[in-house]
Length: 415
Image (tube, rainbow, N blue to C red):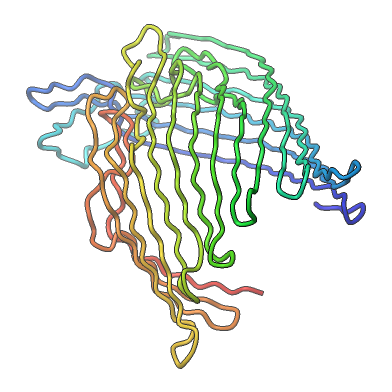
C-alpha cells in the first residue's frame, strides 16, 4: 500500500504472510567413514516440518530543505513473527554405502516402520522488532552525506526433545532476548560529473534461526563493514563502472553442524576483505554487456576451542568472474532477434574443515530470443558444453553437483 500526502512525502506499507509444510526423506551421513574399505554408515531420516510467519514493514519517506541543505528522510518500522516445528524420525546405521563402489536404490522404511527408532521434536518462535531512521543530506551539488541507524529487539524461544524406543533422552527448552543498535554513515563526492568517490561504515545485526543439537539458541550474528569505492559513467552515461574495496568482520556465524545437518554450530569470528569490479552498459547500440570480477580473502580469524581458526571460509572462492553480453538486431526482416553469451568462472573452494578443496570451473551459457511489440520468447542453454562441476561445498559428506546441460524456454508479455 502506498499513500502520497504531497509531492514530497509518502507512506509505504508492505505485509507478507507465509505458510510452508515440508516432508523430507533422505539418507544422511551419521557414521564414520572407513577410508580403507570405503564403507560409509548412514542413517535414514524421515522429517515432517511446518513454518508459519508474517512480516510487516512501514516506511515514511520525505524530502525537505533546511536552508541550502537538502534532505531525503526515511523513517521506518518493521515487525515479524515466525514459528516452526519439526518431527524427525531416524534409523541409525540402517544403511551402509561404499563410496568407491556405490549401489543406489536401497529400500527405505516407511514412517510407521520408524516408530521404534530415534525421534526428535524441535522448533521454536522468533519475534523481531526494528526501528530505523536515515537521512541523505545534499550539502552541495557534488557532496552528499548519508547518516542512519537501526535499533532491533529480537525475542526467541526453542524446544528440543529426543526419544529412543520410548525413552526420553533429552528434553530442553531455551529462551533468549537480544537488543542492538546498528549505525551507518557514508559520503559521496563528485570531483567531476561522471566520477563519484565514496566511503562508508556500517554495523549489522541479525538473529540466527538455527539451534544447536542440544536445543540451545545461537547468539545473533553481528558485523562491521568498511568500504571505499569509485563509480564512473562513460559513453554519455551508457556505460557504468564500479570499483570497491571492503573489509568486513562478522561474529557468531551459523554453520551446518558437521555431525548433524538438521542443526547448527557457530564460528567465533569471520573476516572477509577484497575488491569487486563491475561494468554494466551499452557498448554500441543494441550491444549490452554485464561483467564482474571479485577477489575475496575470507577466513575464520577467531574460534576458541576448535581447529577452525585460520581456515578459509567454506565454499568461498578467492577469485570469481562473470561476463554476460547480448546483441539484438534493430532493423530489417530479423529485427527483434537477439543472441546472448555468458561465461561464469568460479575458483577453487574449501570445505568447512579445509580438509579438501573442489576445483574451479568455467560454465558457458547461451541464449536466443525474439522480441516483437509487447511480447518476448526465448530459449536459454545453460551449461552448454555439459561440464561436470561442483556448485557448492559444505563438508566431506555434503557437496552439490552443478546441473548438467539444461534447456529452458520462456514466453513473456508486457502490458
